[in-house]
Length: 342
Image (cartoon, rainbow, N blue to C red; front, side, top):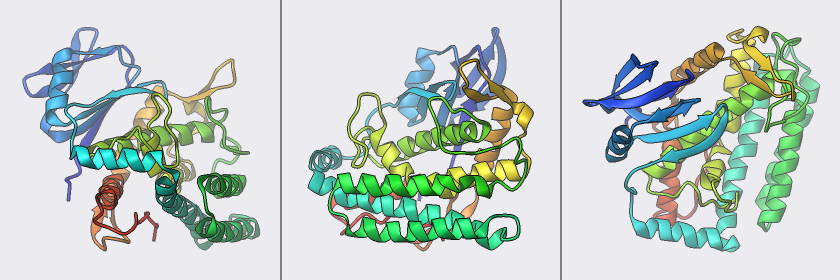
């Protein structure tokens, strides 16, 4: 099993990334603000950075360290070095992606995992907070998701699959606000919105999904797959389609529950968000650092993977699923087994 290493997140503006010896250094106004040994890292994620040295980029490529760049919360691009894995695996991925008959079974299992895990989040809330929430509303939504799982199992093409997935997501997010049991006045949620997020909850969700997308892309690359060629999300220039496919299973149990924990444990508050003139809401820099720190801590949590029956750290779940997907594409497995939260 792959070892879980650290991801270095650069959130300070006007910083420059450089290489000194075997260390990445973060410079601000020509002064070294941080020095981190490269052998401790699996990825570097930069927000609002002003540049990176060619020497560092080359060294990251040689060391298998993924570099991802964001402008605010919006993904801009990523750099990886020499391709990993067997070219035959990627050719199989491309062929299956081009044929809907081959894409559909993979996409179907991923969406089964997504809806199952959405239902898990609702059921968990009913169990843990029955006196603080509208249990009847959540039970009704949970029953709808249960029926959606059956519809997905019986559907026959990608168009139907996307329809059922969209309906399930709409119902899930229609009751998501019920799961916020603290700071309700500051964290009002009336529905999912993005590009840009228009409230505090959606700002946290969008940021968490960005972090999760980056991790899924790195996991797919490590498994020898192309994160830009998907099965549910179709090809679009610059879009990490397969990473978006893979993260569907993790949105609810990892990102959504993470956001709910931040709010309900009062680890973020109303004053840590900034509303722009166009209505967009962004997380303040200091709060973003704390969110990232909590995200890193959550990655170390041990869980038993339901398919492998082994203990793995939460941060390795995208890698495990990418590995299982690669095994299926190579013909070592009869089907891709999605992640079902237990």
